[in-house]
Length: 205
Image: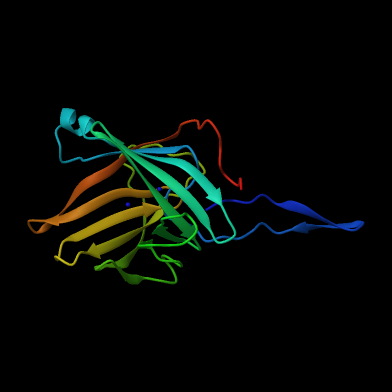
């Protein structure tokens, strides 16, 4: 279960002299992180009407940078209701968090996917399979969006296998499960856009 902020080139004034400062370099994060970003997912195994009724909307409700990392609150909405979760992002890593300042259960480890290619979290073992170009199934993304993502595979303590394809700044694009000797798509990104927030918490203290 879309993510690393681009910092513009600035000018630092030191006394009477000024010089160009290089942009702050941060690792890509393979999940959503920009306030207002709204993603909609469908299960392609369902018939058309049921697929629409079972849609999942994932939205970045708020994002706040801190000295330790970035706190991101996500909302998950279906026709049955809504729930929210708080995440902590740092150095490309993503964890569940109680307070937005300290990591909890690891979703993606710091350094993912280049410096850490296999890890275990809460009994589930996950490994990076490799990079690939996104198959967006006619979904249109902004021209600036990265189309090269990462496939990873997870195995639960019960032996259930799952593969997920993630894009930078978006996160999950498609998820497959191993069923009856074949990989079957059960979750696919079908919409990407932004909804306005009453107040942007990005960068506020």
